[in-house]
Length: 148
Image 1 (cartoon, helix red, strand yellow):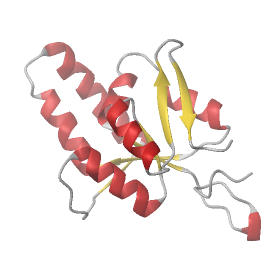
Image 2: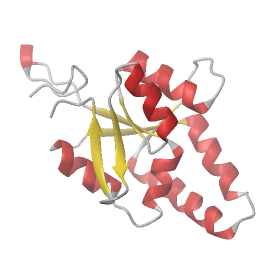
Image 3: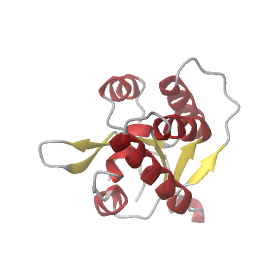
């Protein structure tokens, strides 16, 4: 099975693992009792590598200090999940916003972006980059741009 040239492929006896990059809002879903990891793995039928870019960690840390107890608690929980299940990637790309960084990293490294940000999803779609998102009506993970 080939996933859009992005990860799973058994041709030429090399297997490249699918990598999924989480943005801040997808990580906060986990704090809302939505098992994002399980749903992703069921949807794509493979266990991918999960990554988070270091500036996204910074966003979560700011939310922890935000002063609003409910958001702070969710961000703290999201950080603990990241440390347990994700690889944190230090990046050296120049960027003007976190969304810009995510797009540049996804283009350069051929990763799938997991986000619920509609503006970011629109930009990913425009550039032909695959993404994973939560369909709110069903509270289920969906994919876009992945041939599975």
